Every structure is written in structure tokens, then in C-alpha cells.
Length: 174
Image (cartoon, rainbow, N blue to C red; front, top):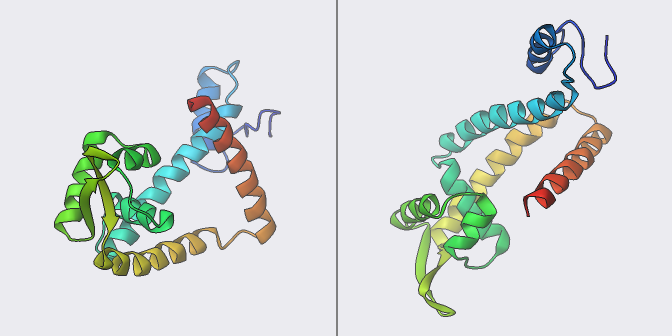
């Protein structure tokens, strides 16, 4: 039986239904409806990341490397390390480590920032450009297979709902 908050009594269904059932057995008066949404988003993110990381590793690239190369490719311009940290939600130290690895692999270059003598600009190299396209195709194929069971209408509806949730969470972060 489904309660008004989306909780499915009895734990039949997915992992989160079973978790909610366990919590409901301990604290029946605490609503687990919001946890049903957030728990599924978190679990999906973890599972998708694990599978996606395997796709990336089969292409010879790590998640950290892919994220920076993809960001440089889609912006089409050199970027500062602080822009990467902000967009990728990484620490400055973690961002520097990622960039150093890409510089060593000759996938990006680090140049002086003419706007800020102490800062740097990170630029995609031709080798970086050659590297990203086949990887991007592999990731796109993986994502298409993952969502392929859904109808186009369901994919659009889910996209709209997730966009709304993400917009709300990002606004609260500012």
C-alpha cells in the first residue's frame, strides 16, 4: 500500500523501499517520503557513477580527467583553476592535482593568465581534443542504454522533475 508521502508499505520494490520499510518499523510516526526521493537520487548517483567510471576506465581515462576535458571542450575556451573548482565542486588542491596530471599527459597546457599575473589559464591541447570525442561517445552510449527502457515522455517528465529539484537545491546553495 502506498502512503500519501510515497512510502510503499511492506518493502516490496527497490532498495530504498526496503530501507524505508526498516525505518518505518522503528519509527512509524516519522515520514520517509522525502527520503524516498533523496535516497533514490543518491543511490542512483552512486550506481551510475560506478558504472560510468568503468566506462571511462575502459577508455583509459579517469573521472577527474574526463570532467576537466569535458568542461574545457564544452566551454570552448581556456579556464582558470578556480573556475574548474567552482563548476566541478572540487577543492582548489584537488583541482590542481587533476590539472597537473593532465598537463603531464599533454592533454592540457597551463599558461600565464594575462588578466592575473599570478594566475593560470588551462587550455585543451590537440591531443586533449582527440582524446575527448571517443570517450564522450562511449559515455553517451552508456547513458542511452541506461535510460533506453523509458519512453520518450517518461524521460522528458523525469528530466523536468530533476531540473526543478536541482534548480531549487542550487538556489539554496547560493
